[in-house]
Image 1 (cartoon, helix red, strand yellow):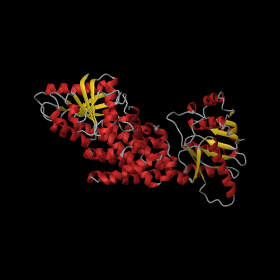
Image 2: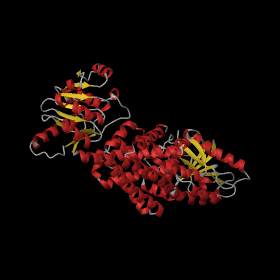
Image 3: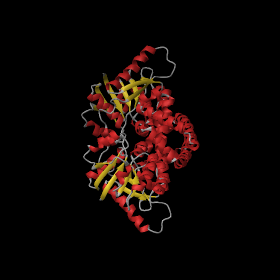
Length: 287
Length: 287
């Protein structure tokens, strides 16, 4: 259990961390800070909040664990802003979808007596905003926790215990923590999240441009395959920018695969297409 | 209302046609025929069946509307088999996913006094077999009805009325009928059904080959995007073979689009990617 938890800039994810921590008894005291005064006023009225601070510094001063729940660019700004106010032994984490740059810049912003350990809970909703937060958002979901990839020899054991405490926190919220380096994380999510998004967006944009009347005939297959194309463009542009190199690599590999499949259609190579259908079914059935 | 409906080789779709026709009073008399004697015996015990014939000929002899519910290759065989037994004015339709070849070959197999008008209800389920049929499978779904593309001048009005009666039948089952030529149908489904299937299969097979451990981290986005990859490989190989030319064309156009998107990642062309995200969202939101 965390003694004092601070969550800055709570949206859907950050407020769900607070609600889940309260519901599941994962933190004794929960302090929030939000950028807009109206949001701070509204949050003060919530039963799952103990205190709402007027400034980021005040929010984190007593905190053992700080969760930066802002979009990626703001995470880095906030880390620098709160750094002087962190108490010795404090751990700072986040909930951002991309990790390499965030971990590098936030780690650099930390004082010697505090540590940044990135997190990425694989949870979300079509709805956004703290008003839509739920205390069960993380149940059964993967929560990536990043192992600093820097060369750490002195204090390796202490570091291991800090990482373990972040993992324990996500476990307490119902998630399944998985420790990876920031680089591994970004390669994984490029393939299992950002590539599917790119393909779904490209398919939906392609069909819309091709003949938008066809939307009338859409079956469940098309609905499922393009569901994530309805996601927020602002959020995705930021993810695309942050993870550009890994997405590009994943996209190039997928294009090579798709060209193989297209060549099989051209050549009538049904054994190859059958093998792909069976391999795809095997993978999907295993999810 | 159809006076006498015959359904040959009922699987999920064919038996759902029977159940829906019974539940919604779309046919007075329903006769079925199934290839396997055990299936015929089981069907005889069903309340939504009036009679189960021992042979395809016997099943269709009195029928005003015959529904061939077999896989595509078998549809063509069955059409030739029942042709001599059809009564004057009989209409034969089907529920196959691809139409150009089926319509051409089945039309050629008909006697002068009967007519083949293809159908493709855009409905289905992960489950197969007549045991999983439901009477609400077609509600709100598109049912394509194909207009013979052959040069028909004499009897155009009579043909129009026959097409209208097939449309009425699907309406009675709760579907939304849409009249297209077989060629238009195959172009449309290549884009809205067979292309999404190919992309989902390729993505699932690609990720399975890349690193199958990553399946542990799958979120809802990947689950949705690859859901149809779990479909039956035998069914899809047949669809791929039947609609090969149109799928190839759709796939080539999609590949061009995807290459544009990949080039935008390489060049950091965020306005292009934002435009695609917004166009994709617009299309998906409209489904």
